[in-house]
Length: 394
Ligand SMILES: Cc1cc2nc3c(=O)[nH]c(=O)nc-3n(C[C@H](O)[C@H](O)[C@H](O)COP(=O)(O)OP(=O)(O)OC[C@H]3O[C@@H](n4cnc5c(N)ncnc54)[C@H](O)[C@@H]3O)c2cc1C
Image (tube, rainbow, N blue to C red):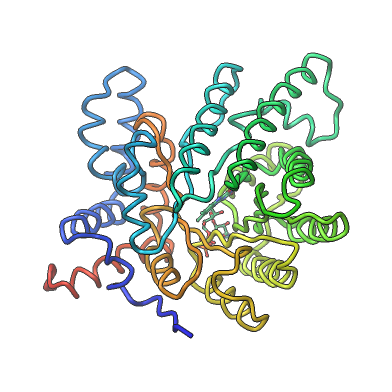
C-alpha cells in the first residue's frame, strides 16, 4: 500500500514549472501580507462595470485568474485539464457564474451547463460538472419553498419551467454518465434544493451516482439530514450522491439570523463542525454501497481520517463511490499526493470570462488575506518547494 505523505512538496508541485511556481509564490505572498490583491480585484470589478476591461484583463488574467481558473472558455481550459490529467488528477467543471434572476440568464446558464456536460463526455478526465441552482431558479422562489409557504400560480409556473430546464440538464448528464454536483449556498433556501435533488436522485441515481447534493456540516442540522437521506436511499434503492463540505457562508448566516431574530444555524464552534464532518465521513463510508461521497475539503486531518476509515472498512482507494476534491490553485499537496496514492481526486475548475469569475477571485483573495492557518499554509508550501528547487535561498 502506498503511504500518503502530504508534506511531499515535490509531488504536490511537480506540475508547476519553475516560472509558474515562482509566480504563484509571489501571488500568495502578496495576498497574504497585504490587501493589495484584494483591493486590486475590487477595483477591477468597478472598472469592468464601467466597461474599462482592458486594464483588468492585462492585470488579472496572467496572475490570479491563471492561478485559480481554467480559462475564459471550455476550449481555453483544455491545456490545464490535460496537464492535471498527466498527474492523475481529474477536473470538475464549474461555470463561474453567480446567482441570477432573469429567465434569459437561466437559459444562458442552463446552456452553459449543457455545453460543459457535452465537453466532459469527450474528455475522459472530466467526470463531474458542478452547478449552482440559484443560477437556474429565482432565489425568492427557493426562499418561499424553504419556508413552507405555497407558491402562487405565477411562481408555480416559473418554478415548473426551471425544473424542466434542470431535468433536461440531468437527463443529458445521465445519458453521458457525467455526474452533476449541486452546490449548497444559504441555509434559508436549502429545503427546496434537498427536495429537488432527492427527486432527481430517485430518477437518475438508480445504478450510478449522477446527482450529488451538498451537505454543509457547519450547520447544526445537516448531519441529521444526511442520516435521514442515507436511510431513504437504502429503503428506496438509489445511490445518494453526497458532497461533504464544512460551509462557506458563515458570516452571511450569522447576519441573516441576527436580522431575522432567529437562532444562528451555524455550529457553536469549529470543533463542533469538525466533529460533525468526521461523523459524516464515517456514516457515508459505512454505507458505501448506497452512498457516493466527495470529500470536498482542504483540511489535512479530514482527508487523512477519510483514508483511515476507508482502509478499516476495506474500501479500495479508487472505489467508484469515493472521491476527493480541492479548488484549482489550492491544497495541491493534498490533491497530488492523494492521486499518487491511487485515490480519485478532482480539481474544482472555474472557467468563464474574467468579468464573470471576478466575484469568485475576490473570495479566494479574501481567504488568502485572512490569518487562518490554511491560507498561510499555501504560501509556506510554495516557499518550501522554492527552496527545494533552489529558487529561493533564504
Ligand atoms: C471542491 C470544493 C467544493 C465546495 N463546495 C461548496 C459548496 O457547495 N457550498 C459551500 O458552502 N462551500 C463549499 N466549499 C467550501 C467549503 O465549505 C469550505 O468553506 C472550505 O473548503 C474550507 O473548509 P475545509 O474543509 O477546507 O477546512 P477548514 O479550513 O478546516 O475549515 C474551515 C471551515 O470551518 C468552518 N468553521 C470555521 N470556524 C468556525 C466556527 N467558529 N464555528 C463553526 N464552524 C467554523 C467554516 O465552514 C470554515 O469554512 C467547497 C470547497 C471545496 C474544496
